[in-house]
Length: 329
Image 1 (tube, rainbow, N blue to C red):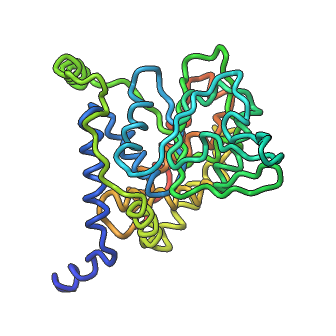
Image 2: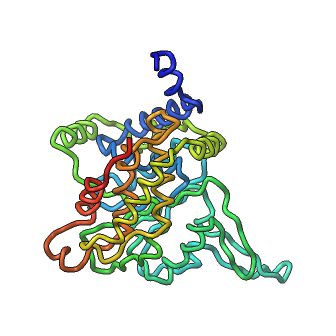
């Protein structure tokens, strides 16, 4: 095969230039405030392209909430923040029917979930009854109240945060709800250089509102177009088989009490396409699948109690699974 034919073979069949340029602008706007946390930002963008919900786990003060706020500010869509507390009721999220004295009829007053970007802070602080209210809205992007169905406006993205350290007054999320999240992102501490940069930025900044200088760079229409574009990204049959092998391995792994479901296979396929788009490609590579695997699988598998006591983590087992499967070429 001569050079021209090789170039023709690897030419992008889908124009990804505008998509990539827009996402770089989003990164740049977020970077005005956030130092480091590139991996979290990239995973949030991948979730955005995949139209999937995200669970962010990290200790307090590592910019989980502010990053989600900044992401919403860079896109021209509605934004709503809900602070979960032990006394929060489903009606506080979804809305409630209120009697209108003027016409003697009940009217449905929409709750804060009726927006495009929903930031749920400390999702594990509310009881199961309130968490279960999110099942239908996260999976089907609709709400049924008093027999009436309300379809939520697209794009619709839930970004939830939780603290892995504090357990008092918290409730563990059920597996069925965890499975509704496309990604679980673990956020760590910054490096020494990043910590110094954070301190310098705070010292030099004269703004009361940190998000003041962040601009909107993508419209809701553009985002919808990008999401449709990502669906068109090419995935070769051997890569689909590679995804299936990863998922099957989680079910057969002796260190795991619970493996991943078919929903995880679909999530891994969708997320891999999003990572390819972030790289400006219209085709998925094994590296895209490997990069997406940790965030897609870590909350969908359960480490066996014996191995957990030994200090083995879900990420470590996923790494072993990926290393044990032959990469398709």
